Length: 181
Image 1 (cartoon, rainbow, N blue to C red):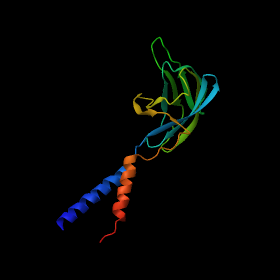
Image 2 (cartoon, one colour):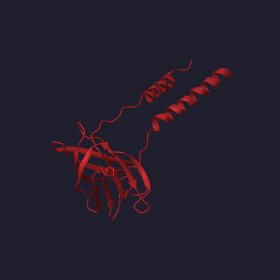
Image 3 (cartoon, helix red, strand yellow):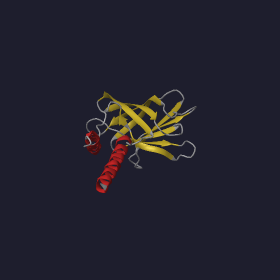
Image 4 (cartoon, helix red, strand yellow):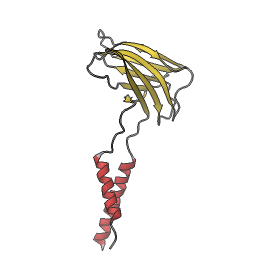
């Protein structure tokens, strides 16, 4: 009987860990999504939306970087009212990546809010369609990095659950569904 109780304890612990894995996914404090529009030839425009999903402070400044050798002729297209954008083109003489930076003049993006209307045009030097860029969320007073990541295509497909999670869910269902004798 003691062995049976020990096995049940192990099963309960496995179920707890599996449930924790299922409900604790990756948490991203900031999401910057983009839509890509081909203007003509190799000239593109990216329109960005910035979401403050869990960052405790308002987003008051962010920078998006454009890899040297893949982008050139960065040109501001638009920004929401109350934001001051600036673009620095890639510079092969330094060498340095290009930069799109936006600074909130009045108020930032509060927790749970999203703001769109940021856009930039550029020439893409690579093959195919340009992809995501690295970004940083900055404290405008200390310039410390509050968050960072890669921009995401706005129309990207929803990711499927990972195999380990699916196996864990199946095991949990089998164990919970098994009738007691």
